[in-house]
Length: 291
Image (cartoon, rainbow, N blue to C red; front, top):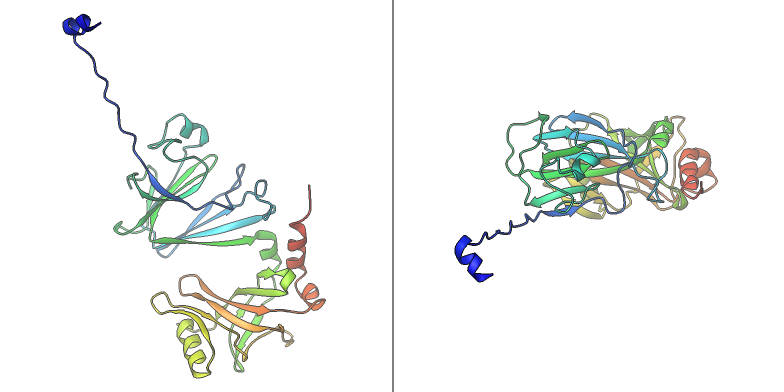
């Protein structure tokens, strides 16, 4: 064959290098509902908030109605486009399944440009120092540029059942209210976000109080106004009729400026816990029901 090559030459086919996308997969023990995630998106100042239903078919710890609220902090722009699972596998996106497996939520480290596909919704004009996120849904693909993200898992039915407002009191002064919308039912724990009454910087209030009263602060980050306290004896929670919701281990607060601060009541005794929070107990029991 060498004489043919001398006459006609050779057509050398150069191998096209495969682009390597460096990413971190965020959906490891959870994911969006594969049939109907029912994506809801809203802008909150410079943050973007996405609510979706969770995949309770694959992950046993979730049940029907469980959702996650993803807050993309300091978001500059986002795209929720119509590339579905079939389109992605047929090569209709600017990356493919071999480079970036479909059906997950990722933070892109490198290897994929930040030119988002249309339609693009801009929240801010400055894209510098933003992280790149992408989430593949059954019928849509989501991308955004944001400084960071946070996750808040909840159950829609339980949240709607939390109709009571509990008064949060610090040293005989009411500082806010909470719905105590979250729980660890087996441990008798109820906790929830505090809606502060006209307090501009809860972090400052809590930190100064803890320092003044020798309350141990587990974690303190002034940059993000994050604080995590041990039990605060004079931090109390009352029902609207004046009954105190007591936990044998006491009450503590944790949280940060961008995500809010949660109060935890630790070790509420049964049967009072089940009487006061039947929705939390029911939600826990439903986790073990088999179809």
